[in-house]
Image 1 (cartoon, rainbow, N blue to C red):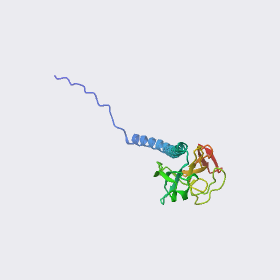
Image 2 (cartoon, one colour; image 1 turned 90 degrees about the vertical axis):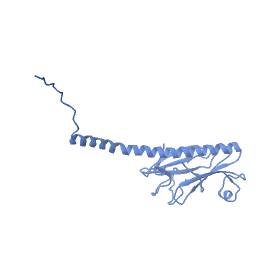
Image 3 (cartoon, rainbow, N blue to C red; image 1 turned 45 degrees about the vertical axis):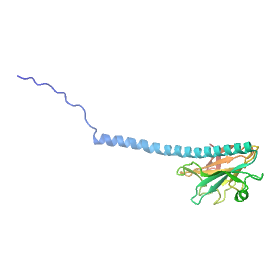
Length: 204
């Protein structure tokens, strides 16, 4: 008589629908909690990247002015769509880089216009729609330029390393407002964040 061999039963089984739904719900909770923090980090990184690029541009132009023994400057221009470009100019008559001298060809272009390598979907050069005060406490007029160097959009550097003092405003996709502040005597830059509740600026 032939003896039957006991075949072990397959103990593997699939997930039930309830188990799958439970896992998906847990994943959904983690995603819902993590996404705002991740987006906030991306926005802050984009603002810092834009500020770092502005700092690098100014450092190079400042070094150019010192090396040439004559003024050099960065001129920012806003295009119809709202985006900004910048170009570098060399002073041709010893009075700094000026709009009238650029128009007349006295101050020659050293580096043609190009865009900042910013991420406009996350951070851009702009002022918010709501009214704010500048880092000195003066209210910024509606429709004001997001690039302010005295009454111009040119930051000029002297052979002594000094700069035109001014501010470049940045906003992120959540409406936060930042400022890249340029100090004249030292040409140093600081990144500031606007606190709407107190109308104050804090260093970042």
